Image (cartoon, rainbow, N blue to C red):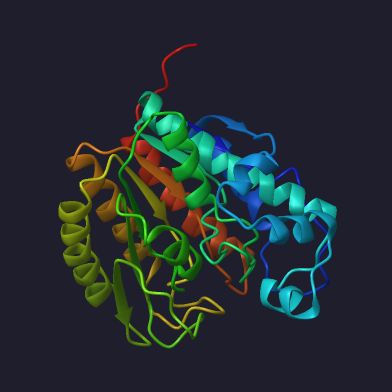
Length: 304
C-alpha cells in the first residue's frame, strides 16, 4: 500500500457551476482510503516562496501572493484569486515534491492526489495552474542532490505548455506530451516530444502512439525519475477533452507508463492533472483506477 498526498482539506471559493472539479479531491481521498489503497493520506505543508522563486518570476509571484493580478491574468488563470487558492496551490506543489521523495526513498511510486499543474509558466498562471509543480519538484530534488535527469510524461488531454517553457530548454530534463491536436492551449510551446492526436482518437491509436513515444523518450532521456501526469480528460465523456478513450483505455495507459518506467528501473511520481466530466463521480472512478494501478506496483516505505 501507498502513502499518498492530498490537499483536499484546503478548498477555496468558487462560483456556482464552475467547471473546476473541487469536490472530487475529498471524494477521491476518501475512496482511496476506503479501498485500502493507501496506509496514509497526508496533507503537505505549503511550499516556500523561496522554492517557487527558483522557478518563477519574482514580480509574478508577488502579484500572486497579494492578489494583484490584472484582468488578463485573471482570465487566463480561470479561477478567482483568493488567499485560500494560493495556499492550496502551494500545498499541492509541495505534495508533488513529497511524493517524489517517497518514490526515491523506496516506495518506487509516489502519488499526489492532484498536481500536474502543467500550464503554469515562469511568469504566468494559466488554465487553473498557479505554480508548476513539475519544474519546482525537479529543481528542489536537484538542490538536494537526489538526481539530475528527469522525464515528464504528460498524458493530460491538453499540451503541457508551461512545463515545456520551463523544462524543455534544460538539457537534463525531457518533456513528452500527448494531446488532442485541436484543443487548449492553441499556441503551443514545443516539448522535446509532442504527440498530436486527432479529435476522437480512441484507445487503440492512443495506446500505440504512447508506446512508441515512451520508447523514444526513455531511450533519449535516460531518466532517474519519471513525473507522470495521469490526466482523466482524454476520457470520452469529458467536458473539455475531445478524445475518446474509454475508462479501460485510460487504465491501460496508466499501466503502460508505470510498467515502462519500472522496467527501466526508474521511480515514478503520479499526479492527476485535469479531468472535467459532467458527473464528478466519473472523475473519481478514473483517478481511483490510476491510484489502484500505482498501489499494485509500489513498495511499502521503510519504517522511520
